[in-house]
Length: 167
Picture (cartoon, rainbow, N blue to C red):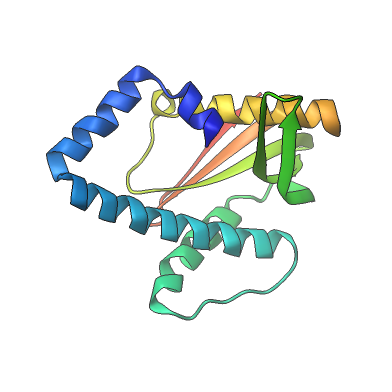
């Protein structure tokens, strides 16, 4: 979160502020909280899957995040080895965080980040996520070994998948 907030462009910050003004602060808070719950549940399903552990939330609130997680899994056919999930990473006393997954994707050591979204993304809108991946890769290299690429996996709530690969 610190990396994302520090690297977010002024344009993106202004866009988010304008959205809050447009929909109203209460509605923006409701939408944001709903998205956060959905994202947390989706991440948990993905983490359990990658760790080889079954998990099934049969509640109404568990259905959509589970389907979103499965949509991402269906697009990870090049992910051949899991080194870890929720891998704690730090770089000296500069930053720390947890990557969603580290492993081998398309035969290269890779940091993978899972995101849920309400709308499709354009590459120019996710520059801050590339910075986050780069920061994680730098920390991973210092502590564990070299990372060759990052993969940002988005799933929209209508189950549209988007993957952004960066070397």
